[in-house]
Image (cartoon, rainbow, N blue to C red; front, side):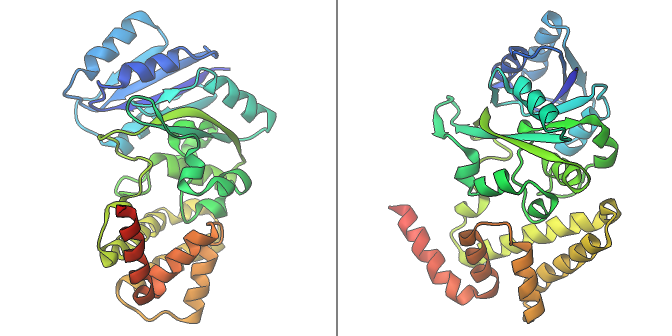
Length: 324
């Protein structure tokens, strides 16, 4: 069974060789590594040419204009010819049996998508945390929910951990192009979860490297914000973008109840932004949306969104402890 591994590159010279070597050194060897470079200005293209010359599994596409991450991955997805495909970042490290274990799991469970945990490391591959799921606080959700409802509000499936049946590409595309927060991995997992079956591997099979140039990392953007109301505004902005993106592709869901939930969720967060006084019905909507989140996350978000005067001093206390 052949696999297509999709890697979108852009100015990745610092860690690129290590990542490609970790993929080419997999115990499972029947795959193509499809790489699309998005007009890199460093030595990325020279590095890619080296691998093309020495390993016929590597296929490189050199873009003539900058596409951005979403269109770059979409370009690669349209090149898939194999039964399954995987996403890859340009700066991580794959455990040598990642592909082999993913294939075994997806076949054993007859699933459409399988995802794994990650080990969080620094730029020198020194461990920061042994489990990305636990670090982010969604280990229970990742292991026990893995359904559409649990993904509807927040993503917990990282793109570089997924193996997906290629029959879903037609359903997944086009990828959202305008959203800052709904990326290719989230969208792919969301669509497959709505119509197919997912499975997980608890073992971390990726070393998730954290460094200064990470587009998406293990830290939350809100951790860097010192002003409470700026943080609250960001919470709301993210969810407005989130549900606006869902609204733009609402027919994709093919389910009237999901379409309605999408519309009222978008209106709910827009109302919070505009200072609308929330009704009991809308407060109940909050608990429905957040039902799969852990209790602390639910409580914190409820206070931030609905009781900001109470949440502000608690936020300041937490920030104060964080300085020590």
